[in-house]
Length: 233
Image (cartoon, rainbow, N blue to C red; front, side):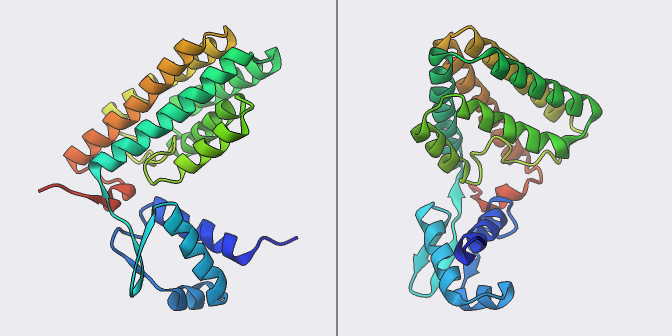
């Protein structure tokens, strides 16, 4: 069965917003998007309504506009993701994981170590995202899994929301290494069934992303998603 057209349009448009390809303040009209994507207006309109529900678009009399975010909203989105992921890893630790899951987590950590050492930052983004998804899945909670996935849809809240373009930045590489240490300690806490420690570590991990956004914003570093942030004067 082919994927519904509205869902395909949703994925495309969401990706363009989250990546910064569609800037904050950009007007989106169903008729123009339908011509561009080669589909009818009905699935486009449905996708736009879904994106409005996710908080990525605002609607007025003339149609939909890509939302701009205040910096505080960016921090709130990251903090929310940290709380939700923290709840997920805490639950995973409390229920316990198998030796097989522990081995798979360590294999993923080894892959992340490899790409960091080799400077393959593009590959790191996807591996890091997949690692976080796997951690959340270990909670075995459909509600938590769904809420974490919903939080990831905000332009700044996903574990790899900011593409690692600054490969030659000493600060950024240090951030990756610290984040990887967090990953390792979180896995250890889950395996030893220390839910409180796993939760606290995930909050600290989210705080690292919080700090990276603050530094990037202050330094006006090029990051596509920052085009959605309303800069203070």
